[in-house]
Length: 154
Image (cartoon, rainbow, N blue to C red; front, side, top):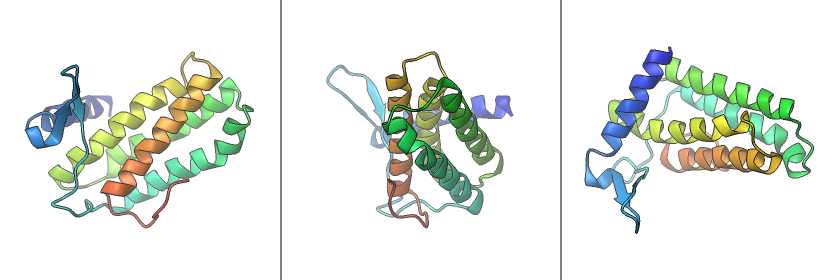
């Protein structure tokens, strides 16, 4: 499983940086991966992807009150991070998209994984809360670029 994940991340970055339409450069010349639509349309999804992305959103939604009121403990953040990681792992294990859609999805998942590592890390409560918001922003990007029954992220 870990091997497949590493290969998929390598594939994402190779694919994302292969053509000029998949990335842009900021003023410092650093590349930034950009999600694109499928010729103006959202990418198709499958049931495992939709179910696990909805679960990630629901985990965050259930924690938002505690996060906003600064009531999350380190253990709460670790539990949230574990749940999110389990859903991301399930996406990698079960999701079957076209190669193009999969490459776009991996951009979202790479952002989620990066932020999720901060959620369970040794950071301040404020930084952990910001990392959860990063995951939520990636979820919102997913909704803008992929077909999904939910239309809004809170």
